[in-house]
Amino acid sequence: MPMSQPVAEVGVIGGSGFYSFLDDVEEVAVDTPYGRPSDRIAIGTVPTGRRVAFVPRHGRDHRYPPHKIPYRANLWALRSLGVRQILAPSAVGSLTPKYGPGTLAIPDQLVDRTHGRAQTFYDEGGAVHVTFADPYCPVGRRTAVDVAASAGWQPIDGGTLVVIEGPRFSTRAESQWYAGQGWTLVGMTGHPEAVLARELALCYTPICLVTDLDAGIDEGEGVTMGEVYRVFAQNIDRLRPVVADLVAALPAERDCPCAHALDGINLPLELP
Image (cartoon, rainbow, N blue to C red; front, top):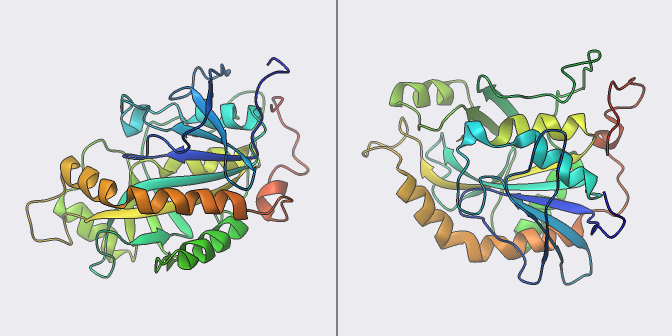
C-alpha cells in the first residue's frame, strides 16, 4: 500500500440507513486478498482530531444483501488502514416488547444462525482457534453505554443478538423460538463481522438501533423494509453524533482482551 495512504485509528461500519458518517472526507479504494470492500473507504476526522475510517457494509446504494456482504474484505481493509477499534451501528429487530422502535441497545452476546458465509481468515495453512466466549470488546461496550447515556439515550446494556441468514425476515414461529431462548435482538449482519474482527485482534463494539418488533412479538402484518428504513431515518440525526462522540471517547491505548486475541498463536498468514 502506498505510503501516502491515509491512516485511521477507529473504523465505523455503517448498516442499513447509515450510509455516510462525516462530511469532509477523502475516499480511498483498497484492495485486499479477499477482493474489494463494500465501497470506497471514507477517511475523515472527528472534532477532537481523531482519524476515522468509514465503510457502509451494504455499499452506499445497498447493493449487497446480508449474505453477500464482503465481510472479510471490509475488516481486512480497515485493519490495513491502521484501524484497531471498530464501531458497528446496525438496524435490528426486537424480540421483546420492552424494547420498542427507537431503542438503542449495546448487546454483550451473539448467537449465529447463519449458514454458508465465509467466517474465518484462517481456512488454509493451519487451524487458528480464537477465544470468542465474549464476542464484543468490554471497553468499547462500556464506553458506548456511557456516551449514549450522556447524549440523552437510555441505552440497553447487554442482551443477546441472534444473527439470521436473511435476506428474508423471520417467520412468526422462528421469532417466537428466538425469544423463547431468552435472546433479545435479531439482525442479519453481526456475524461473521464480529468473529472476523476478533481474528484480526480488533476491538468490535455493536451499536444496535431497534427499528421494529419482530414478527412473533408484534401481532401486526410483520416486518417490512420500509418500516426499517423509516425508523432508522427518524433516528439517524440523533445516532450519528453519538457515534462521533464515541469515536473520540475510545481509549488511545488498548487494554482489553481483544488486543491479545492472537497472542501465542502461530498465524498461517501475515496480517496487514
